[in-house]
Length: 126
Image (spheres, one colour):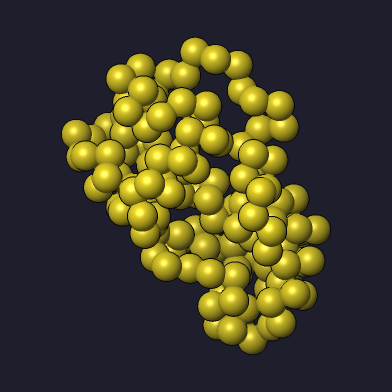
């Protein structure tokens, strides 16, 4: 993996709960946002925004399974600025609401959606 993209992935992994955007990361690493978008997709296999949402959703799944925090608080703690966006994104990517996911103990009985989580998050382009 390209060294710069590798550093960016490490940065995202450490800061996905913060208000991170492609533009802010590009500025921080002194590269053009379009170049970041292209290189990130090539190196990581998904778009910047998809990866960021995937990290946030993985963290949220852990909180839903292992804490009693409210759904709203789980959304905020996972890096989402709006509870409605968190619930809508979670439902679209995971296939059930955050509450249903918690009630099932983190077990989603339905088969994974075609293409996996990253393809489901592709409605917003970077």
